[in-house]
Picture: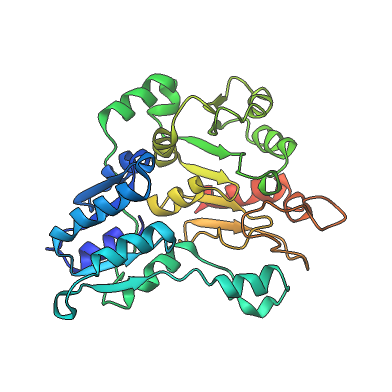
Length: 323
């Protein structure tokens, strides 16, 4: 979604359409640059996808951008391009570099990929090939519906919500290997006795209760209490975000929030903007995984993350406050 501002800056009169799963629609509706959303229900399977793509042909698109580059998006783009050459829209595709990833992670040929891999830039590059410019960057506000604002205002105490002075912590991640140690989060909270914290996560992240218990008067544990979209609003309103390699980190990047990225075993989660400070360690075995779903190869488990101490993160937060 970081590309939408550049598209409208380049072609102000264009209609920007987006195809997505039905469960992702609320987030897309919050982006003021997206004009039309095509919703795909996965329960309808391939037949439903084909019918949707056929209906989309009536829009006569000028440019088709396949940012996902998987089987489903291949089906859609093939149908949209199935026209006479003179009527065929331009096509641009975001490459996944699958063979280079294989060389990098399986054969340990480290020169196969250029690192660090910046996620937002990887989505911009294919659009630049068809003339899109990103001279004004990608930061832009989302238009959150009043229902989301009202819910968060009802969940957060007044001094949290109306001062926008809380720090958002994202201690969870899809894989354990990507998670900064729980006791480190606790120490971080204790280092700032004058600050308030909000923890976000899923309903399965029960370990966050132990983190919040270290200072219950100053820490609000929202794990499992908000959906994905509502959690993005918590990110949007916070003064600073400290996160593992998660989607919440990249939301902070799009919003232009100050943030700290705790990068462990993975190679593709680096934020792009200058407002996010990346903290990582230089180890021979890192990065070791595309998603963090492997066993740690180091003799000291998760050394790439445990070497990032709470004191180091504290110093970086202080630097943000002094800027």
